Image (cartoon, rainbow, N blue to C red; front, side):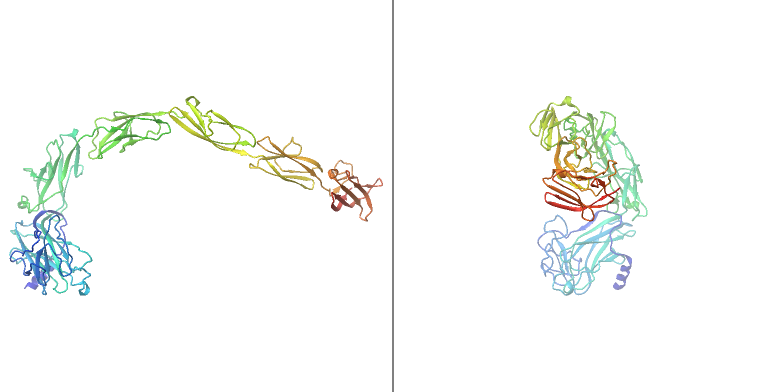
Length: 618
């Protein structure tokens, strides 16, 4: 028969917590406090009491669990010194080890039973496979012990590496006319090496719907500024129907949110408050049956709806007016309590909102009077006045950094050159000068501090030198003269007469001779010069008296210290020769013009010999 009842119980319920709103505890078992062990009341257990370490089939109620290598733990109940717990060492036969009767319940009411439990044997013990796990079955029976109401199994709870209290719960409903139940705990496992447990904090609570209270704006609280009192509003209780299928109400009020009194005659889902003048709390008691409404063991309470009176904040405390230079980003600043925000306006009343929720405001150089208003974070209550703060900005000199160039071996004038010189009171250069302008002749970075009373700025001038050009070399390429020069700008001009300059470093069709080469930077007056002897041997000449290439001229040969020139025909006949003087041949021999042909030359200049041929063309 017992086996059949247990089978039915397995089908009826399982462990789980109240899915709605749990009320205050109506029954609590903490097993007391003290340093001595004491037995349970007669009839509570079939196990044998032990005043010391409990062997298999024994139990104790103790604040100590330091036996058999178990965890040495405190009980679960918080805040009690030497709190006790029920400690059970499983019997070798599975079965019931604890029962107690819970009275004062209400009929047709849903309750939640819960208890905390721990496996006392660490998983590091020497028992095979970490020890026999604990496995407990909770059962709720009617007071006749003949009708099961609910049950559930914890399943196997293995040992852990550190103590681990776990809460288990079971939800059940009383039947019509039923005001008490029997709680039973059964051990599904057997004794041996393991199955050692402790139980604490057995609690019974009502289980009802979660009920919220909302006002007409769907808010669950109301923060009202003190200048808006008297204040009244309509409240509505909203159950979630998680547990109850029907609802009966009793509205309550409180001045502190702790002590509650019924509001006589207010038993509807809606309630309109009277005209209030101070903070008041409201809640509603809810039961599924009207007969249970007045019994705290049978009803549950809603969430609390608070109507809080918010004191108007004082105007923000000023940190002082602002008197700074135009380029100073220091903000205006005020102080308020931590539960107050600050909003900034451009007028003492009304005006434009400039910034919200900040104790600082940066005018960004715009002078004027700004106004800070306090606003409570709860209720948005405003201070009755705004705090005025003035921002004054002093004009600063306006300067512009520069990068300048100057020519080598010259002097340049540097100027602070403020665009508003009328406000300037003094200057201070990095070289110690105190004038608006200075003359310098060295490259580098120069700074000048420009002051106007309390404000000042610094101007930086980067001065770069244009170096004088350097002639690296001058070469002749046929009748061309090529000048190679360097500078740090590359803006060079070239000349062969010192008057006409060109950007091209090559001069074309230049007669041989002694020249002075001129090089200068486009932006500077300094000219670098070098003397150059331009000499080349023409490849052909045309003695037709047209004024161009009429003779084989070796111009410039006369500037060498020694020279010798000989002209031959293809048969080796000497046609003309010259030594240490200018040389020019018009293509004749014995005053007769020779025919078109190639004629050979030997030119020796300062011991250097050149041979080749020149073409005579008609």
